[in-house]
Image 1 (cartoon, rainbow, N blue to C red):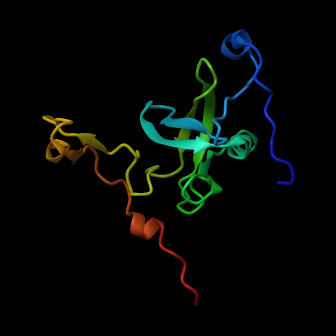
Image 2 (image 1 turned 120 degrees about the horizontal axis):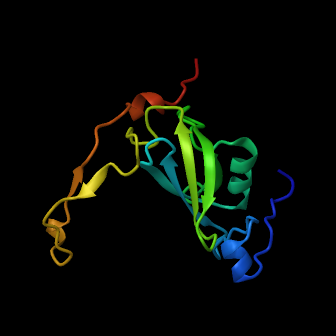
Length: 157
């Protein structure tokens, strides 16, 4: 990609909040939060960030792409696992500083740990923020696939 994608400059609050032109508000780090949900069930599958390049890639291809802060690169969900996320709808919130993707998942799960959703644990009852040992997490879902198999590195012959 020779040129970085350019989205329309943000104009008035009225136009940003009630207008019909995409004017995403990227943070100082160049990123915008993106919530990804299953289009049929509404289940939250994952949360990640996008930059202008990953947002443009998502719009162009119809496959969810994000900016990996840990790897400092664009990544298309499913590039290793095959569990791609086909975008059904892309929404913006009222002031266009958060994105919401409604997607079809090509695999049994969206989480690299083998779960359908990245949100597979919840805070256990009785948690007290003043008592660290009470801040227990409990599993709320079963694994949908074996990540060791799906993400096995190809070995040279």
